[in-house]
Image (cartoon, rainbow, N blue to C red; front, side):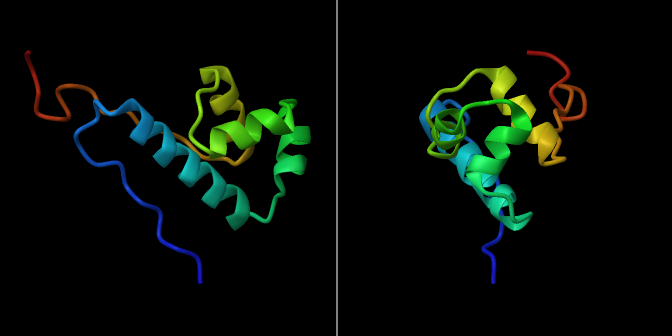
Length: 89
């Protein structure tokens, strides 16, 4: 049985923890669809090293993350400040 996706929880100021969480989720999604890191590399045009770095939570270019998410057919949803109930700072 596959583990549940973990959700990012506040505080969001810990960048390394957030990168690790995104990496965990990317790896989970990749495995869930049955694609190897090598195959994902081929599908995205990225190096296997970049895929591994992303999955380990190491810094990668935003463009690389977006390519991976696109191939895995996964979207990140951003809520506006208003939707979060934060109409002003």
